[in-house]
Image 1 (cartoon, rainbow, N blue to C red):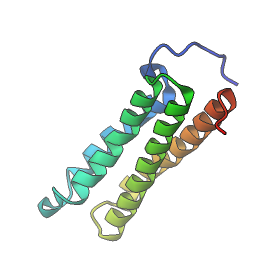
Image 2: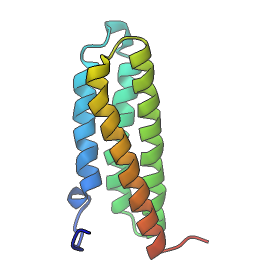
Image 3: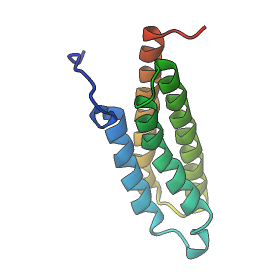
Image 4: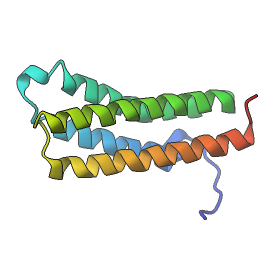
Length: 128
């Protein structure tokens, strides 16, 4: 188990840092999509990816643990949306499976990290 350290900022959260890495991966991957997808899947995937660390950051700066949990839930929803869009992109041949594998692994890791964070926060301030 990691030693407990005081979180001073959302930037200290590993889940936020990994979210930024996923954003960069998605931006890189969508550069090669067909031009007519610029306002379709490219825009949706980039928006969903950016939403993950953005919601983590916004939630961590809120006043209550309950609000933070709510924003973690938003980030989880954005990850599910992004995973769906990535799978569609694979089916349409816009992404090579070899290139998609690291992104799908990152999404899965982030899902686990967000779930764990939400459960830990719930133990600090259970919602009734």
